Image 1 (tube, rainbow, N blue to C red):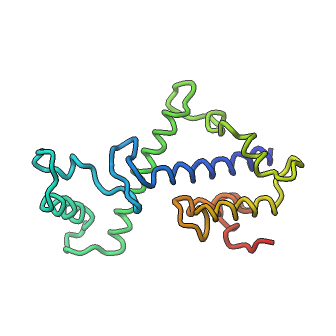
Image 2 (image 1 turned 90 degrees about the vertical axis):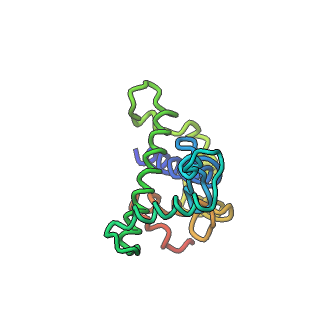
Image 3 (image 1 turned 60 degrees about the vertical axis):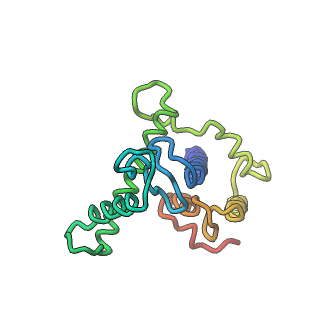
Amino acid sequence: MKRAILISTIAAVTLTAGAGAALAFGKDRMGGHHMGPRGQMFQFEEVDANSDGKITQDEIAAHFKAKFDAADTDKDGTLSAEEMTAQMQAQQAERMGKRAKHMIVDRDANDDGKLSFEEMQPKKQGKMFDRLDRDGDGAISAEEFAQMQDRMEKRGFGPGGHGEGKRMMGQGMGNGMGNGDCQNKPRQ
């Protein structure tokens, strides 16, 4: 049972990091929003206020002013840390909702609109485990796990990396399964 949980956790984190990196640049398949290095920028049709197929500087300024005004919940003309946090949380919740819907569309084998444990399993689960189990003993040692983390960091994922997945590594993979304490432990 512990082996199945470990495999599922490693695979889920790897898949999530890969999906996040893939969406970091380009178009979000679910919403058509332009994605920049810091996330969603805008949707062309939203900004093109007069629907002439062109975006002017005035339209961009008006669009971002409307976004600012929507975040300024107390209408004092400034954004407090609380207002900015609320705005960021709302945007994050929207992105997460889109990703969850996409996962269901992608993996829902029985078309019930939900994902079972079996439907959540990575398609190449055994392959991933075999890649991590460098010595082929049927288990992933702490050293093999640390080597995997080092490889991920060198590719830009994980603490010290610059990839989208850097927030994923070290979360949900520590001894406490979800408390992220592996990112603070020295490697041996």
